[in-house]
Length: 355
Ligand SMILES: *Cc1c(COP(=O)(O)O)cnc(C)c1O
Image (cartoon, rainbow, N blue to C red; front, side, top):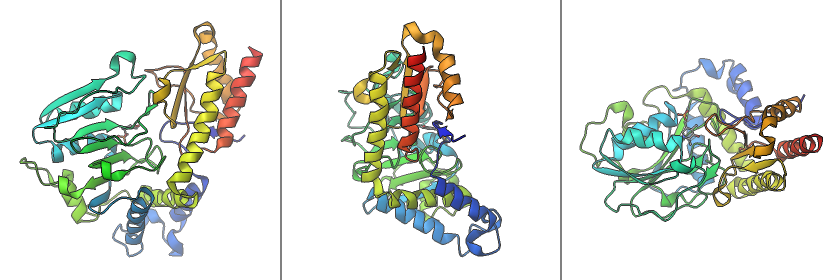
């Protein structure tokens, strides 16, 4: 049966990315060796990294003065690598969910941390607004898409201090004004590649300003200087990332990808809002296009397990909501076709009619 992959991460990738990556595992560039068994310093691997960096810059329209890095350790390592490199005295954080909170916690080991606002009391169902960012902070950290709660900050906000964004789950889902950010980072496994590679886009002039010793591996300058080749990078995930970047370009770039994402999210949110049985959990104006969270209305809550079973029988995968929210989460990343969203909507309607 055809599967509709709503997994939150690791998650769906374009079919052609999987096929090209599988081919490279069998025989990399018809060279008689698998990509799994070549040196990262092989002559035919360097162009993979170079092209991936070039496509990052092209698709996101990254201005001069920024570096693009491919590192290991996941977004979670960036939670401490960021303050290691950029926090001298004080940093500001917006607390919009568990990931934001984990980032904030790590920063506390390096200096004063100001939580400018939090939606924790409302189980992170909205993104706080109207807060003020301390102008003496070294940076202001946000999480643009809150994967677990289905909220998303779709605006490139203006910050008086360098703006740092964890874009793990919405990178490449819309055009971004990178010039408004000091740094953007994320784990690749939501919208870009299999797990194992972490991307970092950093404004070079922000580096080298803290007084502490930074271990070599944790110093962004090390990786900038060595072109992400200081040590062995995650070769296969970088190869897959390149295939996704090419796919994004072939779709018409991020303007078109955003249109597709809006169409998918609108289709599903409309179905939720018109339903007698289901209801969305996130504040409407902060709704994520990537992770669409919904529950059953109180009078139908006893049917949640039945609906999951029904959806599974129709080929739906990964719909169970995160344990801290419950209900359902349909992750609609770039690679998810609108046909899968339509199949989910049909499934919801059918279940509602039958019950
Ligand atoms: C998944 C996720 C993370 C954690 O990423 P790892 O690569 O597993 O460390 C961090 N932030 C956000 C927003 C996420 O969705």
